[in-house]
Image (tube, rainbow, N blue to C red; front, side, top):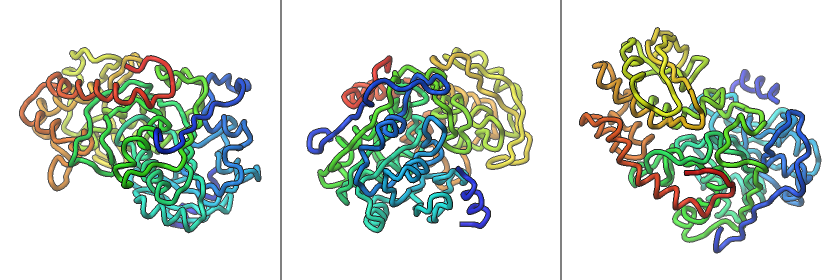
Length: 430
């Protein structure tokens, strides 16, 4: 790790076979300073005096989103309280303190604030994590990260590998649950066999509509046994968020939004991400290096005609504004791009995957310069993001957005029914 990054860190703040415990906070939540309507799992555990972790050597998987009501980080608060024996911290993509960009991490280091050893968990296999658990003496693994509800957002796969490592070492696994910022709606295609990767290790839907606690229940019941010779976690404990309904969005919760990653600045970004992330697979900028990533989409060859075509589409919850921007990092860095800004007109109706599908279809129709990003084989990244080669091959064949979307409706319906027994929160989740 570089000296510059060290300086930044110094200043940074089973179902069936295994017992499954869903912990509700005792009593009503005390009024928050910002009149919070929702209490996260981390807040519930802290209010209970961290009792679920008493007498255990604890390893924490977290990032800057692992905050309490006063905005302090759970690791800092646990350490300062003297009530939790935190023996290791594991940092996901972007790092524990959040100093790394997309595809990066902070490496192994001693946290300057707490003196706790931080291990790099981005891309780490279950074997590596199991070795680190044993090395640091971890008996209970705590996961507290704000997810954004998309299959290709890597934090849920860090959790999966961490769960698999806990199966192998016999460690308890505790999930401090947080609301899904895109709500409980499931949308998009299913990941198919042969298309697993670091952005989709198991067969789940593109916008899964579950919290990390709910996903942990499903992982433990259905997926871990396939990868662990039939075994499940010794104990999975989900400490639920209190007062959240799955049809609520961040504005309804009163919770403070902390960027889960450098290019996820607002809840609106998260709402668009399940669809707009598909532009990572193209030669268009997805707005990285602007103040509106995943809202500004464009390329040097795009003109007013793209916005004009998209404005005729009846896409729920979004509108398209002709826009020009110059990203300073990533694709088309320091080059003027024409394109659109995707404006959210109704966050409760917005369908990001549908919108992105229309956008890609129209861009391919209009611009000979449209292509997949440079890689070998061409188009592999769109296959991994959408979960199969179906999107790419239908687009190449000239299919309409409506035809492409229609192919996965039955998959979405099947997923919605299948996940039902793992859900912990009430509310509309069609």
